[in-house]
Image (cartoon, rainbow, N blue to C red):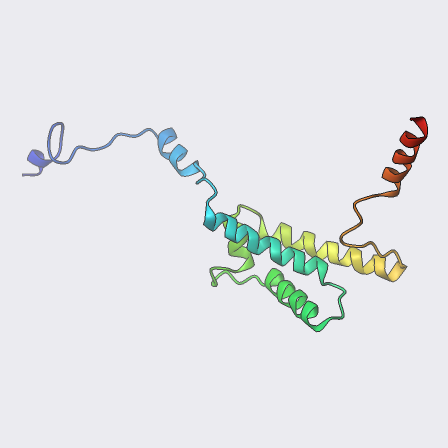
Length: 140
């Protein structure tokens, strides 16, 4: 009975696929869509809150920092929107990103202790830009 169902021209014909064809399908990246953009925005917001509100004294800003910090340092993989799971979806190494953010925080702490406070959002016009504009104005 099985011979009548399996084979060429029968009901069930086996599909023949080379390993290279199979793995090429698995390697294809889905085009970024709205879900991808949403989780990317989640990660971006957390990093911005972590950096922007690190030294704030405002209670709301402090809460944003603590929430972002807690989310970043958590190694929970059960919650679908955990830092580790979001990084894995975006194909980032969560430990590498986590360590980089924590090292950034340590460097900022050290700069504060040394009195070298650098604003998070520096002005768009730098002194070098102003000097170049003055030289150009004198030449014309």
